Length: 270
Image (cartoon, rainbow, N blue to C red; front, side, top):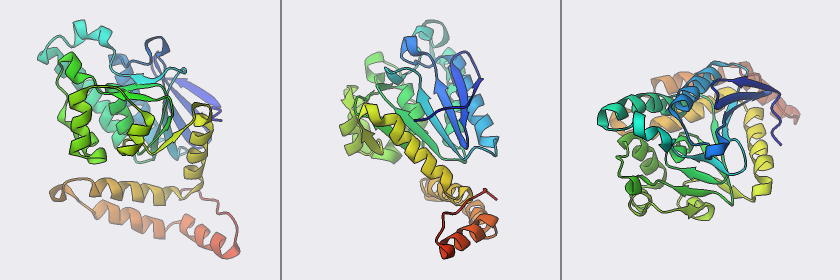
């Protein structure tokens, strides 16, 4: 079980928790199934920025509070005054887009633990994660076509990269709900577990990540993300620097010595 030892309030609806080397971002709006308000988008931006710069944190988990939802999309109650037309929607998008970018470009592994509803903007948040582990009660949808709203190309781009054009069109055109097994089959999520086992399974993955060499993981994440870009935009100079840093690190020496001594390595991230 994930047992956070410290809690920090970022906004009234976004919390940061720390459990050793694990940082946890919590969407806490359970009375509205963790629907994401403008204030919460700002909180996600601030949380991602803070945990990215915290040298004690090796991996970050994002989750929803309560047992009903990861996040039921954007808070529709705000649409009447904050998303009335294209002009006001630009202000909303400015905050949410910055939050997406901060999450998606975090240099540390980001894992989404998903249960219950994962809808619209909530699914977009989950797509910024490197890994998604879900309970068998998870329900997904992007209801844009049922609301008449336009879906930003950046959000669709992440979906196309992950599951391809055909599956993306299936989600967008039908705007229906589908379950965890279908999400797994289309490559939207990495693992499905029974709801009662979700926290334990997620904790196992987070701990495994944190036990491994942080510099190696950072370099692997950066290289993978670079390859996902269009060829004309790829720049591997920084990746090569990250790889060289691995070989010059104390962790590399520790890993080799531990392997030769047949013991578990203790990595420091340096």
